[in-house]
Image (cartoon, rainbow, N blue to C red; front, side, top):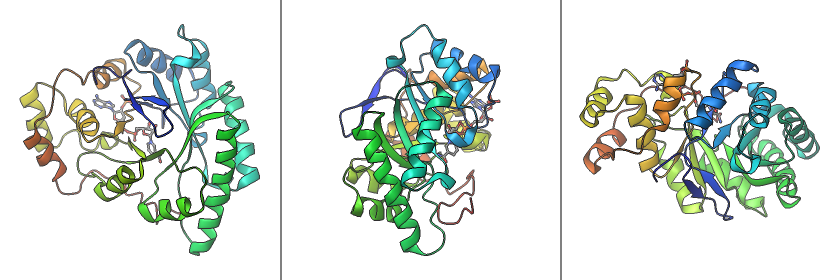
Length: 283
Ligand code: NDP
């Protein structure tokens, strides 16, 4: 890959640009619109939002205002936990589409497995939600469907009932949290992994070991993290509202991390995590 516009190919053949622009904690106003414009100028062609981020209007306005056609920007949104279920999911999708001002989404994800309480209950709710996702996909309102924060046991339950398997799983992944078990499961199942908090939301950026490795390549730790995710075959979703950082995070194609350094980073002890365990979160 040579640019953020280069793509991974999903199991259904649909192409997804290899770096996504994150928007969690980006406000529903001009700041986000400006940031998306900077991102598009820097080469990003993929924007990640969610109903829960409460910024779909701003994301939609930014997309409408671009000089490039809608078909050249990949847009993801996510269904919030309280809207799971067949009818509620279809309604929530409609609302997201309206807020975004779009007539289709490129990717729609179940935001969390919400796997608390009796196993058969959350499994049933997720399966019903997935039936709605399959309908949206078959009806052409969304080009690809997937999940987020699903561990192997959540995926296994969903896939035992599904007609169409998830194409993407968006999970926390950064140096200090490689999520090898979930990634191995996804690789074997043909599910592309997207990495949320690729910079650990900023928590891994001053780690001395990463600073030393990054310095050897003449890059920043943020660039090292993003490159490390790509070289692990996953799709990073860095977020920034700062123009220089937005550009910096897309500029990761002029160096290659050696096998030895990949191994060193893969093997770092756990650190920098959000602490949000998909089996434990209460929302
Ligand atoms: P990131 O790991 O992308 O880090 C973002 C933070 O790092 C911000 O504070 C940003 O500041 C700062 N930053 C960005 N680039 C640089 C840089 N080059 N140098 C120094 N600091 C930098 O965090 P997020 O947690 O936002 O995750 C990224 C995206 O993943 C989200 O925006 C969202 O789209 C997705 N996500 C999905 C979740 C899910 O459950 N599916 C959960 C969490 C995130 P500033 O903006 O001020 O520049």
